[in-house]
Length: 318
Length: 318
Image 1 (cartoon, helix red, strand yellow):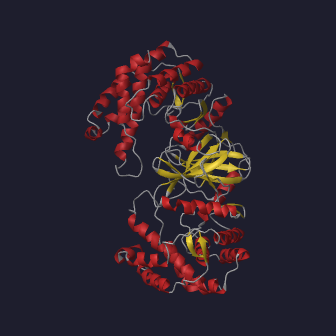
Image 2: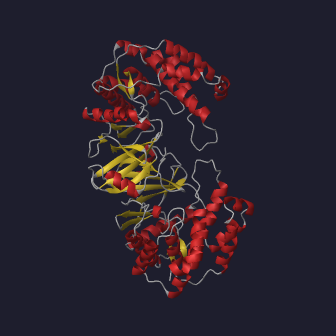
Image 3: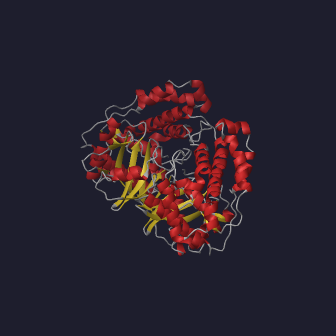
């Protein structure tokens, strides 16, 4: 959460004038997004999110990310539309950085989701997968099962063990998961990071899925597994909520029924999902000093989830 | 700029229900305020700023700060009104911290003010002073001329000289300013921190003066001097803009003409204003490691302004 760049009122007004959205009335830097700066902008004609791409995001990939929002919006998915400028461009440059103006959507992110909310999210995720089939652009998933194995294997094992004595076990497990990874499941565009933070809701209704900057082309069932791991546990991964898991999968299948082999692979896909977050969090954990002002996300939150799926995956997804 | 506390959607919805403002629709943590967390909250009935008081602010002082907003609003000053809860309270407690719901005002803060904007700010400041005369509550100014002298005198002089070789001179000057400080100028409630950041504008119109958490009872002409130092230079204090200074004072006098002795004291008051920021910034500078993620504000920005007033104050305020 951050605003990394200062944009003056005059620069903002000039930028907004490049779009057919009325005049600038207000702009507040908002504490959302980890790889970009965001402002909630109000004009005489409405509200918008202005995103400035700071790091991690290669601007060559913006046509994929921003085009995806437009494609999904056109197919009635609850995602914000990209506002194009007067010349038709989805993004512009300001102060040497790419910026995009994005539709503002109402809603708040649940922190203690209910089964009815999990059901709605399952259905919304499936709607993205179905609409994604006709998107036409592809992007490889850099954070796949080989990434997790490779990342954990190349980490200093003593440092790993210092996080937790059981951490070195995850390397072996990540290898096994990567070696058994199913390569032939039905694919589409997947969100691949649909944590509750990235979903806006009003009551039980999904009003917006946001932050598609990990979106890529991969197995749809894997995305369901990621969402399962992200929604159905307490934050630390200590308690699984069966009612949430059941509702999430039911909601998904109401829109897109799973094939038999997808369902069969869910326990392994869920383990892979956990290990993806173990791997990236481990990297961040070891890169971030313990006394830094940034909160480090504990890799153990997903080691616990991974263990849960190892022991109970078959039963949970039966 | 920060959001120091996480408030979940469910906690927020429960809090908002304590006010007669409709149902929660959206809430974004915003990057404003240094001693509190702020959210831009939208309900079915409007938009609001939710402020959570984190540090520096003693909740015993909230009746002064929040009552002041109501008093100034009632007297047609451009400040946000405090929204009272269903029981009539101006603030509540959440997670052991005080929170207040504040009116949302449109406008953006200028970064390169024009004379017309400076004139409007002068007039708005004077309107606060005039309305403040009938407020009835008092608060002492802890950051007065004795504070600056005391603060600089008690700082390690070698550390001071390390910031800049000329810094130790400011101690002597702060003593001289404090000893000559006029104690009998007309007083009212003053903002005492009205930097452009704390003013919202639409074009040349002031739509909101915000962040009254340094407000106190002190000489009105001193507040004009603070605002002069805050508005009429470039950020680093290298260039004075005479047109801005002239417009600011003219705008002020259009609402509240200065007394002769107030005008005579302005050069000294402006030096005192600069030294107040030199003192507080020096403290923060020496307390903040150079490699911290927080940006330190350079005390030299106000040493330069102070020097300018020493040399040109009499002429500028003639």
